[in-house]
Length: 155
Image 1 (cartoon, rainbow, N blue to C red):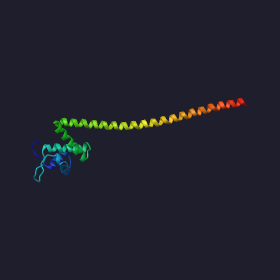
Image 2: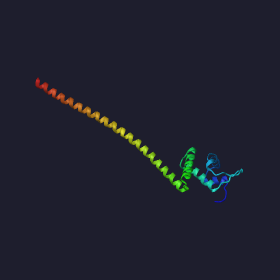
Image 3: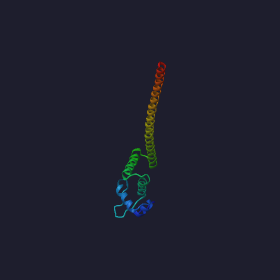
Image 4: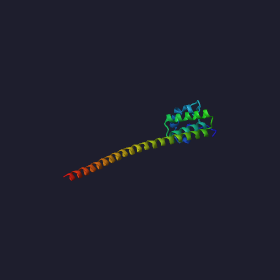
């Protein structure tokens, strides 16, 4: 696509309203290549790719505006720091996201296990209390039998 697009054409490609494109232009200006100085906006393929990335972050991955900006910053930092191309950058971010997701799942599982352990401890304490009560009861019965047997022998 070597031709420049109008804002309506861009909105049609992205399947969003023109007002959404304008809003994203304001919110994500630092991540977008400069748009022409005249009143009529014209967009390049680079614009389309950036807007598509913003749409993906907001709509598919459910980022907030602030979160999407952080993600775009992270991608820029990775790209410049590592000097990697976009596909590798995306792979690294995908792997990072997957690791974070696994960590979250592990934390949740750990919390569940901690709760189960606490319940098992409580059950153990209850069983120990019952056992002690049964032992005391048996000792009392044993003593009653002994004392009862001696008093009947004595009488």
